[in-house]
Image 1 (tube, helix red, strand yellow):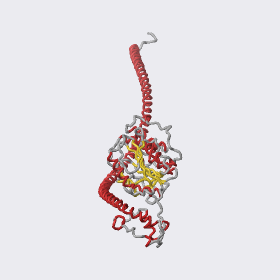
Image 2 (cartoon, helix red, strand yellow):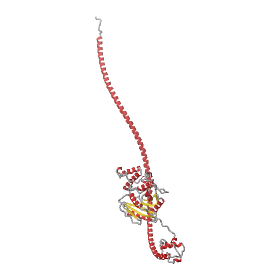
Image 3 (tube, helix red, strand yellow):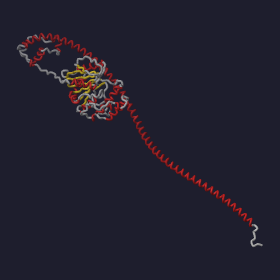
Length: 510
């Protein structure tokens, strides 16, 4: 027997161990393969995680950008909210303004109703005055006929007196008894035939019988004993200027008649009155008048101011002319208007004097004590020689409208004043005039030039905007040039100009 005996289960154990080892190796291989697969999956997952991390980072950046955008949106919303608050406040203010305007409109409507009532009253008063005027005209006509009859009777008396006067002259040539100076004046009146105004001279039965021998009652009669009567002194001429423009004959006849009636109330011994007329349109048939008149020729329509300047120049060229009265052709003069205007000018020799217009007046104020007013209307305006020689006439760059405003401000700049004569009435009805684009355009152009001349930029720009807005011009560049105009601007004081109330050019009374 051998020393090394084989274990009966040894081979089996070895085989079983080999199998187990093979199984284990296979399991290990599978496990390693699984591990590798897991590793590969892990790497894949890690790559995915990295990709996800990069994507998350991108998303975070996008979120940060979105947050920034949201912050910007929030700021914009806050700004919008503030703007909305401002808009709400503006809307509330506009609502308040609308309420105020509605209240103003209501007040204006009430004022219009009141003015309409006043207009109705004034029209009724005017109708009554016209009726009285017609009655007075009839009375005046009757008086004229009566005077003509008396003049005829006076001529007969004068013929009778002439015979007796011859005898009286023979007596006066002798020396008669002197009985006192009390008879001197009536005898001298008889000698010179000046008893025409005495009531006794109207009746031949009342004429004294001068054929009685005078030597029985007088020895000597001397003309020096008669009371002296001073001769009236002429203090100047009033020139009335009218610029016509296609006015109807009825208008001109009415104005001419009213001027004649007003002249009768002026003392002709003290003031001589002449009439100057210029036609800017067709030649007017100015009515025949007892007032000396002179017509100035012109070439076409030269404008109101230039036309009046032509009349003033012609009038003041005559040395005796002391006053010039601008009169609109579409008005009517009260019979005491000239007398009142001259009286006001004598009281205030350094003032432009305007008549008081009716039935409607300008809304500008008047001082009830001094009668001063910021500016005078050229509808019926009295200009004294000294004022014309100091400041000249109207600025001819105003074709129509507002030249009287400019003249008034220039007069005040030169130290003169502007006053109204409250009892000098001038009828000038304008309420019923229809809206006229041509008039509206002329007002805006004149307002633009007035603001340019008197250095008021705000009103100047407003007038230009309105001229374009109302489609009179396409743009501001088309407006007439103002540079280089020969404006009467020496010595003007822009502080006197009032543009704060638009075309009222002063604080309105209502």
